Length: 540
Image (tube, rainbow, N blue to C red; front, top):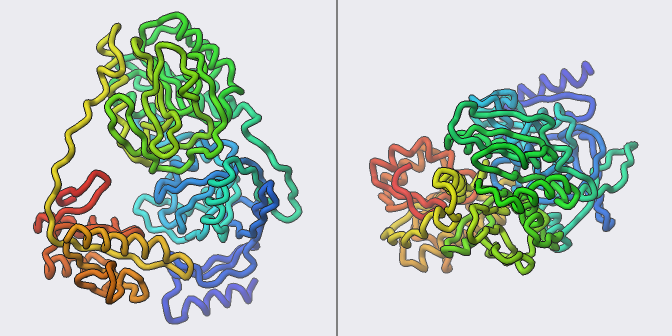
């Protein structure tokens, strides 16, 4: 141990100002902020899939074997919310984003004004395990209180880095359901199919709880694996939320509105809640009913439709396009589900409300004359997107308008197409790869942005510190009109804006949004537009 401590002191004095030195029985590493320079005796474990696929990884969570269904999420941010989403119960989550951990973890004990964990979507981590390509032990988010690894160890959740998550995501996409296990040496474990368990019962509250006490609208929310943000959004809209267990007899309760929440697993394993919802539907109660994710499937089954296990589950995070069957509007949604309702089996009086634009699967249903509707996706979002938060407004409108109101009458009308913003020059903040083998996504997004702007006859100015990027080629259709080989920092971005006076700003993949906070004033002063999810936005 003395030799190890002496070695640490020596390394700390080396040129380069190493900022991190950690010594433990399992892992000894030195790194600059955000970069792993040396790793000795890192504890290893294997990811083993039921088809025989085996991958070696390095532990940064709790060193204990686990098994479950292996799924993936393509969200670039929001791993704190994803890990605490109850719908991931029993699943080993693969994060497709190449680098994970650089945001750290906020203080998970902090409560909001309703007594809920402010930064989480439940009372703790719900995944069975976590898989990433590269893990950053160093974090820089201003709200971070500790590293992701420390949180995982505290919650006793195993996690591996060094896994080829791109290959794994493609395998999951092609095979659909994939069972797997994280196995440490000397800790053998068997494969387990979580869909055979009643996961809803495992994650549901065990007692009735009330939030927003005193608010004028009483909403009963059936907890099948409810995310905290559902409560926050309902209370924000004037609801007193009575959260009840999944098997609670809510059919005789008095309420102004009923919400059946999202949750994990196979809905057919939770017959008690299906029977309760069926009883509500058959009683012709006038109060509005809103089913979310798992609540959508449960409501559909209770109405008489058939559910099925999807060949390719929609567990892709925050970017699933969905079409509103009423007005044709397209929205981007957050999703995590492996079961769906067969639209062709809907009984008379019911029809689809939402349809997935990618695979045409049902994403929501509605009753034609009664105030009942559902959404397969997560309108509560968190971490996002928030495109469909309006469904909570529609639900509250149904409550306030009373008997005879249909969901079609309270949905927002399809807006007119936004007018095109005319720009003649844009500044593209490029981003090179972080290490060998990771450059593809970063370089491709920037080069395609240059190509798209040139096709629209827009002059492009590219800032990119990586001279090896394809997007900085001297010739070809992906070549920008001007290239600055400069670091993407507030100072240099501001200077280029002053020199080039662009009409717009496009952020390349790789976290350049941090720059905006520092240069937002410059953007406003020059009336610069920046690209966003819904088009170009002025200033901030």
